Image (tube, rainbow, N blue to C red):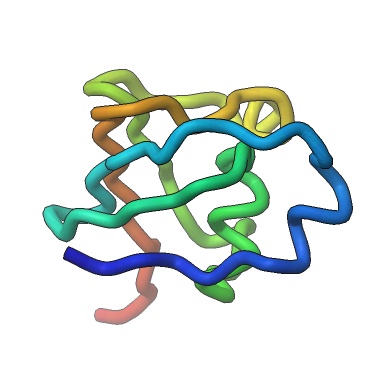
Length: 85
């Protein structure tokens, strides 16, 4: 079990929330604060222009990433696009 240390997001969301567990690409994480999918992508330093995000078994439109907050037991899969021949 991994615990994400996202302390700088506490300044954005001052309301304390309960601990949440979610999976990202098959690995489980625990967070204590409320974060969006976009904040998660930025935390892991993904290039958002080169990925597809699946949220709870549904492909998630990029325009919604900033408004969807991670809840307990969410399942997130991120697939990066790689060019080649």
